[in-house]
Structure formats: structure tokens, C-alpha cells
Image (tube, rainbow, N blue to C red; front, side, top):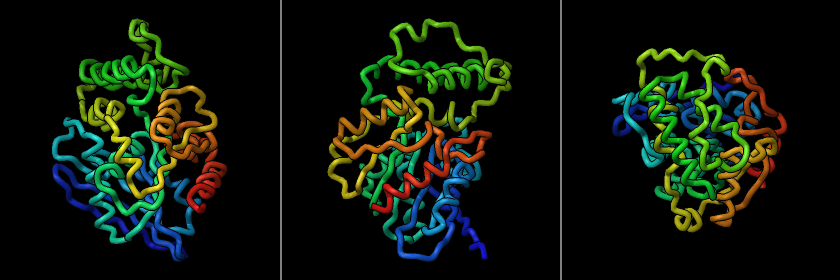
Length: 288
């Protein structure tokens, strides 16, 4: 018999955040799985591999079912961290484990550093933190250019630049922004601007996520065990490079998980990673 999902909404300053509790019997700590701005539905496959735990998922503010008072405003990792604390408090579940990926990993690190939540283990998967990479200056300029492109030209041109960014291997050369802008049509997108500026990725979080300054000393002092993960197939892509550099800067435990940045996906967003192997490896980290 399938347990009933308990869906709730918590009101926070400037937003209303919707989250789900997927109950399970057993003594293992609940597991909070999230990304940003990925919604809860992105983690259906991964969640299914943790039927031995109660699992929490949520939609970050401004994404999916979670609303924000001003959908054209920017949200910082500190804002997300406060939302995560509000969700955890509202669940009443006590100590939990966390798997957070991409922008969600940036937000989770801000959460642990600032709020000291009752989190036993945080697995931070490929946080795209510019702070720790040697090409920080150009990386932050590239991110700002994507945000600027979205405001000027709309989603297609900005997303083409974003996809080019996340798939780039190695350091960004100093003349990276001098190259011709990628054609949205190459990625199956239109260059036409529909006038919308409410994208959670390109408008709300793009400018604030990657350049967020992490408090490494606070993270090292936190009682949470912090494990930084990079994908085995991510190579020298930016998020994987940033993950390894963060781990080195803080002396945090490092692990390699199967697949690339989207290794946990099992068909969500039309992408298939290595979800079975990814979940097995994640079990190995959380169960130790």
C-alpha cells in the first residue's frame, strides 16, 4: 500500500513555500532532497530509491507551486536558507539528512553556515560556487552576462548562453565573452522575446547564486557532516570544478557520484542519467 503524500505550504517573508512529506517506516533519519530552482518533481526517481526513509521535497520560492510576492525580484541563497529552515521547522521531523544539488547545494551550505539546522549529513552535489575557482573573475562575469542577456533579450538567448556555460570544459579563457553569442536555435529554442522576466533560473537566481560568498569557517565549525560531491562524468565542467575547489578550501570530505551534473535524473525534464548507480552510491554515503 502506497503511503499518502502530505503536501503543505509554509508562509515566509515575501513568499509561500510548498513542500511534500513522503512518509516511511523505520529508524533512519528523514532525507530532505532538493535543488534550485529545480522543483520537487525533478527528484521523483531519486526519491523512489529511498523508500526506507521519510523523504521531504519542496519547490523553492518562485518555482512550481511555491509563489513569491514579486516574481521579477531576485532571491539570494540567504533567502533560500531561511525558507529551508522554515520548512524543516514546519515538518517537526527533528534531525534529518540532506541531499542538495546545484543551486540547491549553494543554498544548503548557506543554511548550514547561518542557521545551524538539525542536519546530520549534508551531501552538497556540484554547488556552482565561483568563490573557490581560479578563474573566479571571468566566471562571475559570464554569469552576470547571462543575467543581463535575459533582461535585454529574453529567455532563448540567455538559456543558450547558460547551456554553453554549464557544458564548458576547463577554465574560462579571458576572452570567453568575446566569442559570438550562441544561437538559441542550436538548442531547439526561439530567439524571440516574449517579454516575460519571471524565470526562476535566469531572473530570480542567476545573478545571486554562483557569486554567493560562503563562510568556510562557519561551515567547518558546524556540527553537520559536510560531504561535497562531484559527478564522475562531469569532467572539468564548472560545477564539478567548483565542488572540488570548495572541498579543498574547507577540508571537507569529497566523494564522486555516478553520472554528471544530472546523474540522478531518471527521465525528468527528458534527461536520463545513471539514477540506479547514483542512488546506490548516495546510500553508501548516507548510511555510513
